Image (cartoon, rainbow, N blue to C red):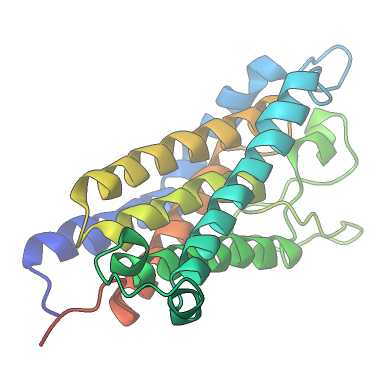
Length: 240
């Protein structure tokens, strides 16, 4: 498969540039502190919205479950399109949408699973703590810079990148999965992925669970994973 120069510019060059800015410029902007400060009570030394019912039950648990349901629907569509179902229902209609997009359904499910799992694994090995655990916000753990080392006495924070936001950003899998077959659905997937990802990440930031940089890194990592999968394994079987 040949991709034009414009594809590489928008899908790889610009994201890599954004990643470099995020790594070497963003830390000096103080945006993390500025954005999270309105949600921190400096007198009580707590994040008042940490246990807010709406943020916990809707923005966190609810949207997380919604993303899981979306991925399982893709898996279900793929399973329903297997030949065994054609045999069971005595149908050979190759034009049915379940069969037409059979490969894409599996591709999107795998992409969502891999991208969110990768973020979870990175969090497990992360030394950086959540804002609500940091000394500067009433916690007990030291702040560790992006490329810093865990100081003596510090504990593994397991809070980088933003895990919750990865579920929303994983919807971008629809963009890559259908960009070669259904442009409108692909574009909708890109927009919804960004909206849900940042909304879920912002909700966690309001609770004191993550800095904005945590979510930006999540978006970047998810994008690069989806791009890599797209380049290695095409979601659409092209005719030679």
